[in-house]
Image (cartoon, rainbow, N blue to C red; front, side, top):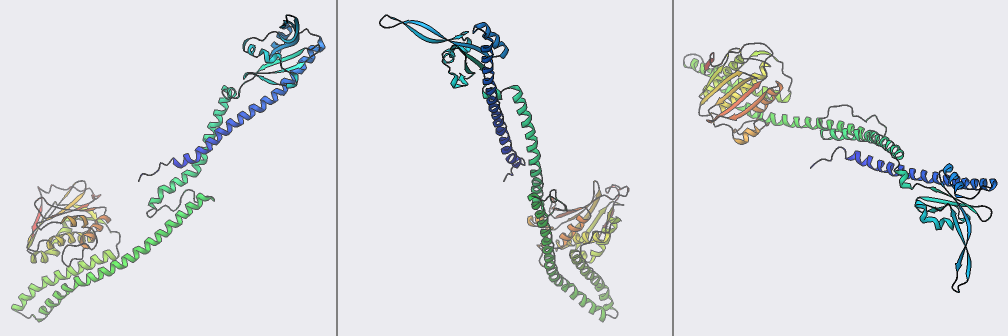
Length: 478
């Protein structure tokens, strides 16, 4: 499922605001234009009456020259309207006088088509429109004369398209965009941060959340997130404690089963030692002592595995020689290997060192070697090689059946084992030990069969020269 873009909420908040601002600003501009025009019409009507009174009082003639002079001063069109008599022959042939009105000077240009309307304009009508571009007013004078004043008017759309109007609106709109961005950001940013952290609420270690200090609804959401995260952490801790208790119960059951057989063997050989005196009994004693030591080591290893899972602790690291650790593991497993007819071959370079917890690494390597020995019940060879490159590596190869596909996928899973009676904790503990050392456990099968288990450890900070394992090796077979 694709997630919506982060800008969706910003647009949903800002778009209506910006649309309202644009529509409102245009509406206000048109309202101001209308109010200004209404005010100017009052001035226009006063100006027409004042000029009519001035002409009447000064007894100026009503001719084209006076109209043109006044029009240039006012920046408008000025006309004198007066009554004229025209002779018209009727149907009977008699001559009739007809009264008409003429404008001085005659309208020209765009006003020519409105000449009839201007000639019939009544003073009682006030200001009237002469087409979409002009408005006119007529003021009566003496002797049936009228003063007609015409001015050009600007349509509302023309007012909006003025450069100065567009500049003012553009500046206002830009300011509104900035304001909308600031307001929307104040709402969207804390919500976006919360949305980004919400999928990771279980692993979120930050104690604070931007916006939690606010006293509005966003602050309530942020504080609810922090409270929910705290509750989840407590629930996770309780669940882990319950799972650990259940795990320890399963481990205790498995451990008791695993310890039973070694204890029986120890008891039997201890009885033989107790009854041995000399001669053949002394030979039996010599044969039983390695078995006692091996079985005791097995019990100790099981207990160490159980203790590691029950109470894991950070490794206590120090520079150590991995060759010596491997040699110790081989010595400890010597009786089991000899009993299983498994030959162990070591091929390690001299001075192969790493900074490790020797006890834990010895436990991890012992688990790998023990698994290899148990994987070859009919005998075989376990080879242990190592080298130093971008990391320190130890490789365990056996001649057994190798890992099954399921085992390769679940080798580090706790309690997973394909061996009859196996507890399934050896490789899991080994993997956790290596992870605690910033290392890794890699398992696979060799091209010719058999399992291949690789231990990777980070390089020791010590500057030590490692020789070529092919030129100088420390070989030992058991």
